[in-house]
Amino acid sequence: MNNAEVAHVFAEVADLLEIKGEDSFRVNSYRRVARTIGDLAADINDLAARGELATLPGVGKGSADKIQQLLETGRLPLRDELLAEVPGSLLQLLRIPSVGPKKVALLWKERGVQSLNDLKGAIATGTLEGLKGFGAKSIEQILRGIEFVERSAGRTRLGDAWEVVTRICAALAGLKGVERAEPAGSFRRGRETIGDIDLLCVAADGEAVIQHFAAWPGVVQVLGAGGTKGSVLVELRPGRTLQIDLRVVPAESFGAAWQYFTGSKEHNIRLRELAQKRGWSLNEYGLTEGDRVIASRTEEDIYAALGLPWIPPELREDRGELELRAVPGDLLTREHIRGDLHMHTVASDGHNTIEEMAAAARKLGYEYICITEHSASSVIANGLKPPQLRQHIEDVRAAARRIGGITVWVGTEVDIRTDGTLDYPDELLAELDFVTASIHAGMGPDLAANTRRTLAAMQNPHVHCIGHPTGRLINERDAMPLDIEAVAKEAARTGTALEINAHPYRLDLKDQHARLARDLGARIAICTDAHATGQLELMHFGVVTARRAWLRRGDVLNTQTAKEVATFVTAKRRDHGRPEIRDKG
DNA sequence: GCCGTTTTCGGCCCGACTGTTTTCAGTCG
Image (cartoon, rainbow, N blue to C red; front, side):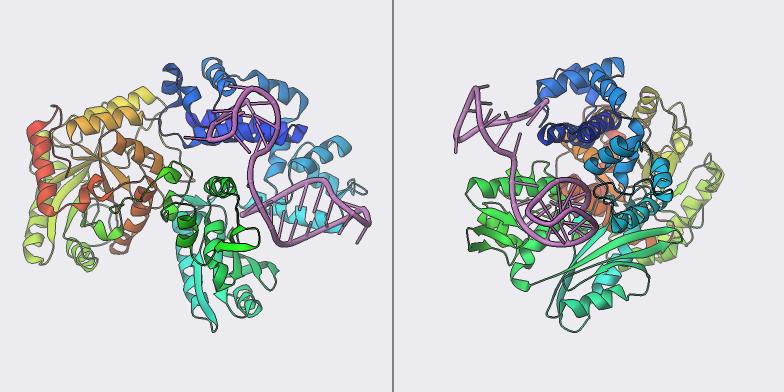
């Protein structure tokens, strides 16, 4: 069983216990275990083998034993016992907004409702008549909720929300009487997917702002619009809506509100605990001691009062950030990025020419780029056969001589074949300036095979980076099973970089994996895999992911100068297979 | 079920909104 599967079992147990009406603190402890394991970068099986399960936060002896049992037998007796009492199909009802465990229990015990279909049937036939808490308005709300569940399975990718959020924020900020408008929530934290969007606004006349917001082009439904809060659905594409909540808050408590609504929930719980230890209270209006307001105007004030540095939103996940004495001054920013080492042109499956890509990159202020076309076996992507690559090398070199103001390298995104060999012979790879090797086909379920394949590629002296290491497509295709720890260690040993593919559909490595890889000594390259000039700007999403991984400037290959990157390349060719002796920069 | 500089018991984050049970439980973020 992998981490996600174990986490799922614990989350399910928490839900079942809650429907059963068990003590909420016990329920929460199961939920905490689920989250800890779900967030874990290392393989839970390895921790279990080393007997280190109980060292995880929130995991005590009881949970450690249960995890062990689950890994060994694939079953958890507690879960089986619960499912004998509580129908598992009830869990789908919890996904309906406004329906929680108490209502689910009531529907089940009083009306025999066991599934989403049962519930729809019960509403249609009026069976819920007279049931406590199920008046006309509640039923209407539930019906809308069911429709929402059926329509919006899964969360929205960060990139899909980006444009609409930045557009609405800019427009709100331009309204008369609006001091500022900012996104909060998981969007501000840069999570790879988001549930709904939270926006905050400082304005004199809240009602007027909310009215404007509700009347926005693109709004397909207004869920609520009052004096301080509005809630709407906007259509991202046909059949796909996104909920956006806007709150208008006074300037004097903006910092408290922004902190509060940015979350994460877990980060905020820890902050409130810190406040409580000092005899204070923290909520969306401020940090207070009785009636006295200690801090509320800015986030910085609140963190400072609690003895903390201002913590960047990307770090607010209760992953150790509250123990920070100071946030590293060189935490990665977009301005640190000097180039992009993974992109395509019309030579394979891109949409723009070498010159166009170079010009766009120069406009972004880059010092260098590398053109990396697909290799022969990526037929669908119009991969280059060896003779074509030889010609392409000439073409890029010629273009590079014509183009001023930016260094243009020629590389490849070479396929890693099923047996771990590469799609081009070494002597051809040796002619290139930078080689990214990626798996595009045959992503099987076999962890050992996938890992072997990746390690083999890294052991080639001409491979400088592994592209989108797990091959996932967010909301579309799961990551292939891969031993990230082994890959990271080999990357460190061989002087090979691991990519954070910045495309918002990939973000691969993901945050927790990138953090683990860096901790194990691997260098990270953040690249867009752009297939058109506009996509070079997706770098932003890679940087956000890297910040969520706590990466610093020195951890990232393409924050270095062209000369330093060239040194990285020659070092790999010289030292391949031997323990790495590169300096840490 | 977890946890500990109030430590092996007794807590465990905070407040708003909603519907409706008309005084508060349930849900949500």
